[in-house]
Length: 269
Length: 259
Ligand SMILES: Nc1ncnc2c1ncn2[C@@H]1O[C@H](COP(=O)(O)OP(=O)(O)OP(=O)(O)O)[C@@H](O)[C@H]1O
Ligand SMILES: [Mg+2]
Image 1: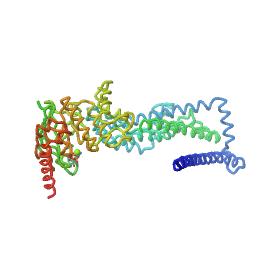
Image 2: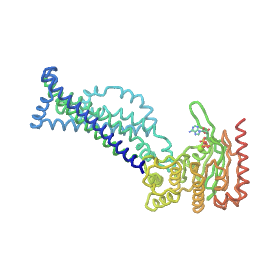
Image 3: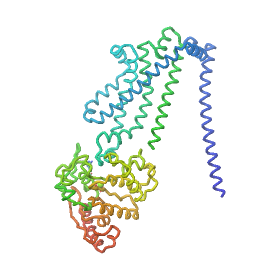
Image 4: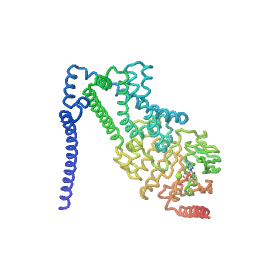
């Protein structure tokens, strides 16, 4: 039958077109990447930009290699990574738990509402010096900053998603004599997974901000410390190297959350 | 003893600006093994009445007794099938159907098998691993019915359980539900808009009138129809007589509303 053949042919062409489009996009993405670094290198060598401030990719690479061989860079990276991941997990986890408590007690949530708004509007990094005084100039203060910056906004967003769950799902559970905890576990929490995931994505960025600022203040270890140190000794190659490494790991963490999302949404379908 | 006893129930919904009297002084009862139906115009308080029987909302006035005990929120004596299916979209059909058993810690291999068999009997085969959105409205309604029946409650409360089904399937399910309930001597309350369904399935029919909901009239279904299965009942001469009577009453209620 001629029509059948046509359909298969058209489908193949359609798929080919899709692949071609995807290749094109990838090509231009790579092109931008290469052009950016090439232009950076070139303009630095030709002194279109001040090489002292903007450094150059080759200098950054050299610094990276020497830092890797003397082993100091891996320890800075692992410190910052540890603090960020821990701050991220604590911030998000505590936010979800607070949201659950607010859902549990509507009275408490009404009472606390204005305080949440105030606390959310306040720039949390400004609390840094206070943490350092209370907890000491160490890793604990830095992790606290990574966590505190995300916790309130997570609480607010997740709690509002808890409240917007269709009450009829809870009603179904109540017809079976479900306890309040069962209602939470079977209806409220799973309905809110998409919101929790999207706040995870926001929190990746927030945790980095908190930790880097914390390291600026504590100034002992980590990529934030390298940035501050590089700034003080006017070594901008070091500052830019740290920035690039932060960008790389923040992206990896974001990708990790996306992977988690795919897993959760798959069981959600 | 009456399994279900409702004494002078009134219910008012309050909001900031308005009050709605949904039910006024409603009394009814059902003995063990009895099947009663509630019909009436839209908005006359049928769903409200079922929710009160299930203990989900407590009435503004009046008492509800199940097995002689005042009904309580979160009791497990009643099985209540809501007007809409509300299957959980992230659970498979099997998980949805087993939900009630899981919540009451009665989930074991035997009950699980029974539930799957019940799904099959309702014409749902090979859907256990699918998700609700892959099913049609009528199929979902049947899953919701299975979910309610699976917990084997003493008192069944069904809010328009067959409304989304085609006529053929509806007749088959009426037979199935009727026979199952009779076999195990279950008590049931059915809310429906279908006069024929009410006559064919029940022992007694309560007709509610609108605004506020009160019991307008009670129809006792003749012995001859009661003892027959829903399908056979429909071919009895008494069936048509009762149908006409109820129809006329409903008409008169509707006319009263217009003026
Ligand atoms: N949660 C609620 N808050 C306020 N008013 C309500 C609420 N639920 C129902 N009502 C009102 O109570 C009355 C009875 O509603 P109910 O849902 O019991 O009617 P129904 O007989 O089940 O109608 P239908 O046949 O359309 O399902 C209606 O006037 C409705 O507007
Ligand atoms: Mg209703």
